[in-house]
Length: 124
Image 1 (cartoon, helix red, strand yellow):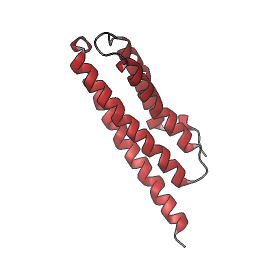
Image 2 (spheres, helix red, strand yellow; image 1 turned 30 degrees about the vertical axis):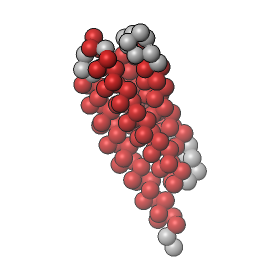
Image 3 (cartoon, rainbow, N blue to C red; image 1 turned 120 degrees about the vertical axis):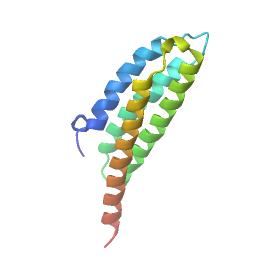
Image 4 (cartoon, rainbow, N blue to C red; image 1 turned 90 degrees about the horizontal axis):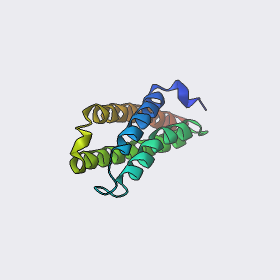
């Protein structure tokens, strides 16, 4: 078990969550009902699942939670792309989209690490 604050991917996903909460405030409810709330929930689940994962007792369970964080990352990207299309006043959000993609690569690498660890524990 480790402290998620020691992980760069967790710290950066927290920063992104704060940034996208600000972006979500700019999504007018009349243009995209519920999209702002969906975006906020999905982006908050990325660091939450990383934290929950690294608190697990086995590498396999850590990998499972990192997979959920990856899925949430894809969900955030989809919500953000939809928001940009529906609300041109948001701009392109290119920096946030780039950060999402970088975080996803980091999550994939971390998940692979824990998957390998899990396999080596099972192999005699």
